Length: 72
Picture 1 (cartoon, rainbow, N blue to C red):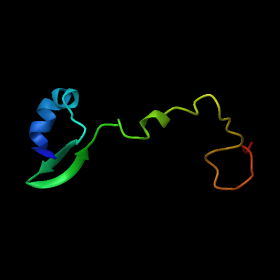
Picture 2 (tube, rainbow, N blue to C red):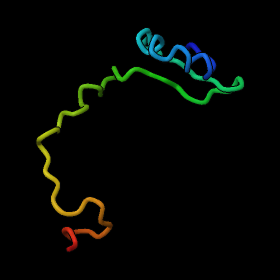
Picture 3 (cartoon, rainbow, N blue to C red):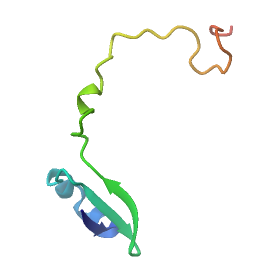
Picture 4 (cartoon, rainbow, N blue to C red):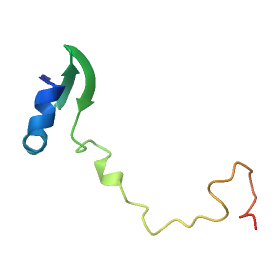
């Protein structure tokens, strides 16, 4: 897997994204790996967004209480 310093990644970000291979890219800072950038083309990439429009949220999704609807 290829690695690149964070400063160089910042300068060339869009070009690197266009040329990103299946193995990805390791981003380093001061010689230490801080992030790994990998393409989303994995075996589960086709699942992203598959349930859009098929689920309905009932109740208050921000509540920590089970089974309670929105408070008024």
